[in-house]
Image (cartoon, rainbow, N blue to C red):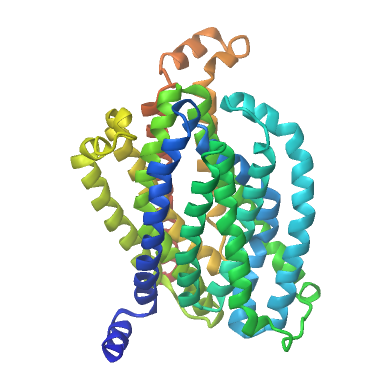
Length: 448
């Protein structure tokens, strides 16, 4: 059996082998997460607050942006130092992360005291202890992937699989205990619990590489220029993605009805299945591409396999939703109120699939230290944000723009879920077109 597994691994190659292993493990976790998103949360969160779950989660991500930006170079240089076997630098880098995270957590809490009341008002929810939990969840969700990335950089994929397999039941158990007392607060308690576990378990998995026998080594003096040069474009991309995701969920909750925002939450739980294959590819793709780049080798084959696998699996799922989406939504009384959103679910799945395929490209480029795509991707995200908030709140422009212009824009009736999803789809298709154009130009330059 072991010999057969080795033959299959040799035949498939490292990318497909580890992607398959992680896919099986992570999909087992996703069954747990799907139960949370599709049954537990709609059961305990009333319909008038259900649509606030996603935007409040994005608030935590936006509040954690300063930390996310600071962590941008750490992920890349973790891979670099680990590939070179410079574990002393890895140890010092992770120590610095802890210090920075603590300082930024305190600063984020102070800032959140002023901004969160405005958010709660627009999300139509009560505050209570929710603010602290949102900040904690946001910071931990940004921080915990770094420690998983340390294992990823060392290519300890089996350890990563075990940790993720345990983290999902921890999230389920925490939510099941906490949500009956106060639904939204319990949700964010459950969001924080697996992040804490991931950090602790990752440090345990790294003990062999970062134990007492490994002496901490400085890295800043030698690599500060490379770190800053890497950070600036990726920070720009990180901010653009975070703002885009937050604006989409905010617009849907702020501008649409409670039924529409709740329906969007439910269909988004199904649509995210379209990213499962691509996210698994990306996890394996980044360290393999970074390793080959460090050794002066090409990794284009890995990239196109990842994009192809993402698109094929995602389009098959989209087709299944197109055929059986309404039937699926009527299977459970918790979802039956949203059976009319089956077409919207198909469109949203296409959005997720296209964006995941584009993310395979960005992951590959960042692993290779190339950032020519950043301005184009950020511009597309910025245009989408401007269109969504501008057109759904077009009445703001009366007295600023000519009345005939505003009336013309208002006639589009942008305050509809269908319109918002079509704008998101156009943005996602534009990303894929940009990737194709970018790769076509690079191939011409290479062959020319």
